[in-house]
Image (cartoon, rainbow, N blue to C red; front, side):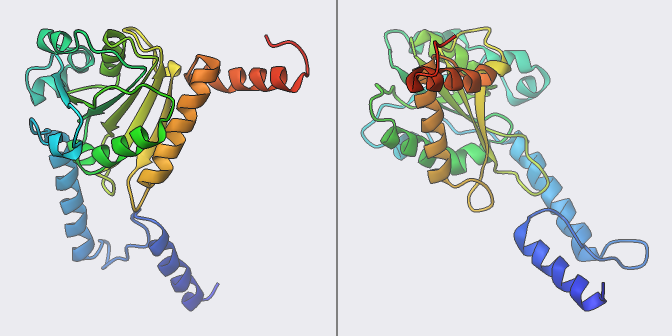
Amino acid sequence: MSAPVERGLLARLRTETTARVALGRVGPAVPTSVALDFQLSHARARDAIRQELLRGQFVPEFPGRQVIELHSRAAAREAYLMRPDLGRRLDDAGRGALAGLNAELVVVLADGLSATATAAHGPPLARAIFERATGWRTGPPIVAHLARVALGDEIGELMGAQLVVMLIGERPGLSSVDSLGAYITWQPKIGRQDSERNCVSNIRPPHGLSIEQAASEIVRIAQEARLCRVTGVELPAALANLRRKLDGDGPAD
């Protein structure tokens, strides 16, 4: 392969990915600009992990809707990072705030390991889900501070939800500090396993899934879960079984 062709391929590859490819070198090291960019990306990833959602910052994002703010049992960010178990359960005030609330579908916006991602993509994605979730009785947007994925199980259980959608900041990478994940759980309750959830990840326009793509995929999974009454690793088999039944190819299992 000639050098000009190789340079052309590498240049095209760099336009298709945010990964660090074909960085070049100066002697045994990378160029100074590349080294400085790496240090900047590392600093941004560290900042994203440490950042917290501000109390009330999402209220203007949902005009006409009540926004409920909850807190996990982690008293501070340091405790949250050191003790994942504390981020999986609500504090007493949070449990009390949900008393009397009921919904079929609950959307939770949680900081997770990147409040940067939740702040950037959480509100527009939640609004898009609400718009597409026709036929569901949706609850108020829930904002969960210092939250892990499993906190959505307790929230959904307390609200008597059929389904909970947890929008949560994913662990930052050196080229993606603002990636949001959506975890979808049927009949949420304390003790649900990760294998009982579906995940839509890399929600990160313009470099990952768009808000529209993510919302459509989340609502599609929600509708399938409602038909099959299950999410997670059992959902594909349940869907196949339902299709056989509808096609008249034999009794459903």
